Length: 205
Image (cartoon, rainbow, N blue to C red; front, side, top):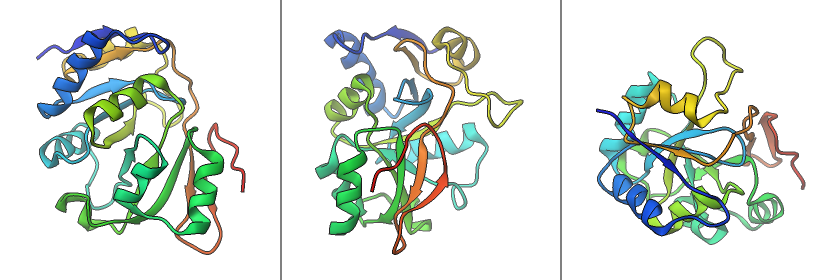
């Protein structure tokens, strides 16, 4: 298998290219795409077989891994996570943006997610991925792309990403250079927000 390398311009995405990627997601494929932080690998979050593929690629245990999904907007989040008024205010103040918010998972997610009571939610400020999520109509399971030799090294050049992953994924989107700092992870399941990992986003609350 050798994946496609697709150039998509954030300001003026070619509809045919977007449709190609949507078809891959719908067929259970894996795609690498830009976000507002680092490049990430993902699939249709409601396709259990694809989700299992991502875990296999990443070499992580589904029971231990933090599941993160990309939603299109704030109203979309409440379909997949339980959101209180106080939590919603924090989400509204910071999204779209480079954050992963940990919330209590709702029952809409497939059985694969039932092993965990929480889910990480992302709404990146990136036109390419938000366009894809909107057109797919489902959230996208997302996992950052890292270099194998260092926890902190992220690959920022889409051509190098394609070189490394072309035989593991169905498509790599070239959306320009990515950043090398991940999203900020914020746990909203307690009384006060807790920053689990300080990344590129500065939390406002």
